[in-house]
Amino acid sequence: MNPNPHFVRGIQANLLYWGRRVSDAAENRMDELEQERENLYQAVRYGLGVLQTSEQATELALQLFDLVDNGSYWQDWIPVMNLALRQERKPHPWMEAKLRNRLGQLYRRSHDFAAARAEHRRALTIATSARDEQARAEALLELAHVDYEQRNYAAAEEHGLEALRIFQQLEAAPKWVAGAYDILGTVAQARADFAVAQERLTLAVAMWRRARRPLDATRILVVLGNTYWYQGELEKALACMQEADERLSNTNSEMDKTNLYLALGTLYDSLERPNEAEQVFRRVNTLYLQQTENWSLQGNWLVNMGTVLLKLEQLDEAEAALRDAIALYERMDDPGQLGNAQGTLAGVLVARGDRVAAVNLYNQAIENLEQVAETAIGQYILPRFRDRRRRLLDE
Image 1 (tube, one colour):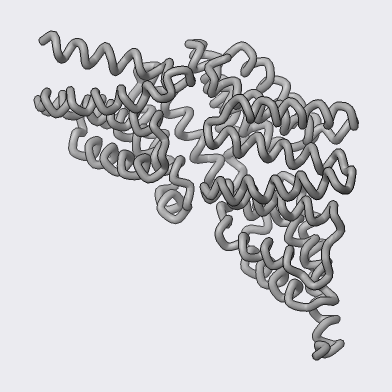
Image 2 (cartoon, rainbow, N blue to C red):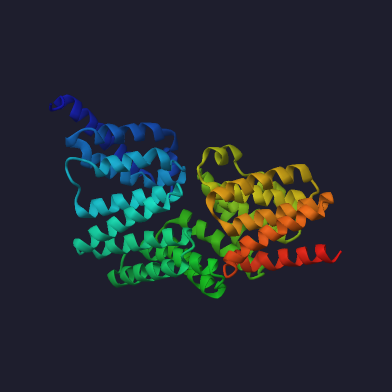
């Protein structure tokens, strides 16, 4: 049965209104619409429920992706993107590839990497069949992100370089070139190839700024700061973090603020300023952390808090945080971070005088870290835990 024409026109008018509101919002100020999130969600859902407005609703859903991503509303919008793909009126190949890539990003954020890879593969197939090189490069770029999350750095490098080549050949918009340098620099950092990481991340920051995407530039400043930190260039690292802190003060993106606070607090800890590190870590919105499904952020915060609290001799709170982190990382199959949490907890047990249990935990930590010995975290932490275990055994 066809819907009432007045009902259809009402939905069309509502979608048009919200489409204009979203278009009027600066690309990097999507958080201005945060208070309207539920209204926007309902507008898209109603629009997708009517054949005559499904395409208009799909376009609005794509426009809203930054709002969804920054707010960590991934699980809410996975059904919406799936509904958009199941419409009776099949979308144009460009639109379908874009939808599948966005859906894949939502799955990746939710740590469903198999589903993410499947969607990006479908997008790649669609783009290749349509001979759409831009869409093909976008799918390759997203596959690089999935490869990185699964620690398949060789594949991430291959996909990222191919995406970069196509974007440069097409003279694509700066944001696409920036995105390619972004993931390639992040991969190089993970592989402990810090000189290459620094070069690529510096280019990414410059390209994001050229694209007038200050939030993305700020995100990469944090990664660049971490690269300097790994190299022992702590003043350069601090300059990056402090600039990012200043720029993020006006955003509502709790995910970005959390990433920054974790990096900045870790840096203060490296500078032997544990009180300042604790203050920064406590700036994290713990309610957001509890609500989000981003286990990596939760685990990183717990480990970092545990590390600093150990130095401040607040052993009960440190042990509780680290045991919670270990439970999270065991669910995530992340041997590097699991080993980091285990070795840090071993330090708490040493402080309590339980040396036997501490040695056992160091053994577990080292075994896990040896699985990622060639990565940045393995190279940075593994020698320290081996040395601490040796000193315990020698006493």
